[in-house]
Length: 380
Ligand SMILES: C[S@@+](CC[C@H](N)C(=O)[O-])C[C@H]1O[C@@H](n2cnc3c(N)ncnc32)[C@H](O)[C@@H]1O
Image 1: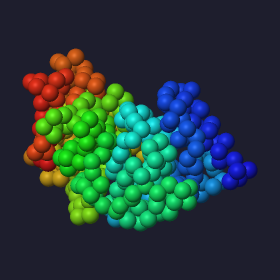
Image 2: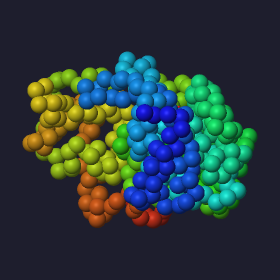
Image 3: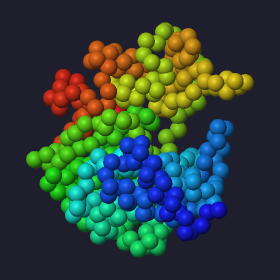
Image 4: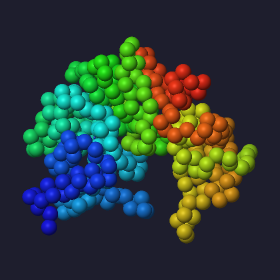
């Protein structure tokens, strides 16, 4: 039976397991995972089954599932007509990987963008002292709940309900900024709020799966620069109060179809570097993509892309045939990206980097900042 007395056994087991697997390499983060009661921050979670249905469960009876290397979805939003996860407690394995990458030192001050449950703010408070931890979330209810839960274990970091796009200027400078939501471009305000020697770790995503964690260092002159992390990771996208819900017309058969054979990987989002390069090579922002499943076998047989202007592409996975219709050729940027990727020796994430200049221009580059292959991120 799960009792208040034995959560410590579960937490220590999780910390030990992560150390055995090489997910934790520093004693300070091992101690934080072993000492922070994750169940306090996640009393209730949601899980999706393979039909897409979400069900809630109380974590109190299932600490084996709480003290585990899994993400726990904690908030759903159905404004788009279906439940959409908008907050979660990130997988501790990924959380600690990010914390270790950021190389915290005693005395560092940190800004977290995306308080969520408050679990990561608790890990940070354990490591640095709560007076050095600042965390913002766009959702005031989440901030209030996280504050109560942190206080219940005697941590009092500074939590503020705000859009993290602007950082938290009133408490700057910070030595580290960690974002637990994905951004389509790194805001220059974060660079402005860093102390000399400061660093940022954030998931840069231009579309779902199209991007990765990028580790940026503040340079003289206020520029941020660094490379993408070796291992792929993914966070939910940053949202803003006035976000529009973009609707994409349903994929329909119309006249004027074009059919050809794919050379690029299908589906392209299974090759995240190619998929990322495709977004940089002109795939319009806001393209929806998905799979069509066979009704009987429930196996995918077709991948689809649909653009906000009504253009669409279907890719038959077995035959690799691409059929498209509409004004925008959606497959062309994917082929171009794939060709560049092959010609460049199949680069992994670490060969890609990002520079954020003092005007806020985000430029992705291959191998070196002055490479011939550079792309400035635009809203296209
Ligand atoms: C993956 S969760 C954060 C997990 C959290 N660090 C934890 O330990 O539980 C992502 C969070 O980012 C928040 N978020 C989304 N857009 C934001 C924004 N513009 N500013 C600040 N927080 C934002 C969401 O409300 C959500 O709580």
